[in-house]
Length: 104
Image (cartoon, rainbow, N blue to C red):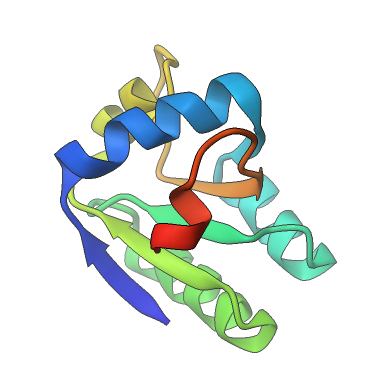
């Protein structure tokens, strides 16, 4: 299932997940988490390359994991997670204190 989410409503929840939960950032780590079945929610930036986006969507569909299309680019997604580098995709392994999984 693919959902579009406003950028402002997600940034604070992502910051809380980074502080209290567990995430994996990047294309390879996201695919690995999806294949292992540890990913609970996947975020993809709006400028993720089409081939990578298609592969993530395919494996997430097989594993029945929800995908959120983040409205910002990869720089915005990395910044929302408190990192100084770009991030085109990330998987939430454990939400921690955040309620991001229940509202998606």
